[in-house]
Amino acid sequence: MFDVGFWEFALIGIITLIIVGPERMPSIARTAGKYAGKAKHFIAKIQDDVSDEIDIDQFKKQMNDMDKESNIVEIFDETKDALNDIKHNTDQKK
Image (cartoon, rainbow, N blue to C red; front, top):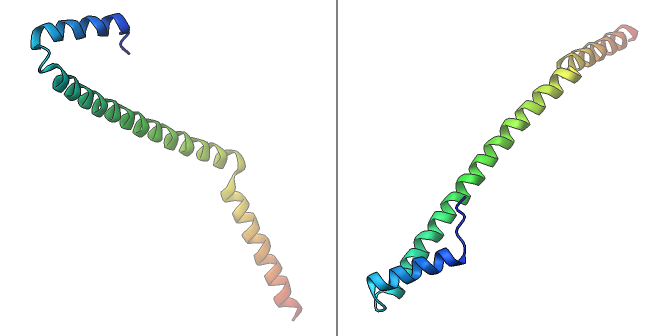
């Protein structure tokens, strides 16, 4: 996303050290790290949620495609008719 290397971080650190001073630098760095970790966790959660939604949509599409290809409803109807015929034939023989 951002192309920030070692030298950019070093420059930001030096400028921050000059502006805030060495006394407040550790607490500012700690706070910045904490917020960076929270942002990273938030972005990872959003990516997981989006990928889960995409997977569900693809699964639904695949199931619909499989249903169209295999005509499951027709297979069930044919099986039900065949079982009813067998039952009817068995009842007639008794």
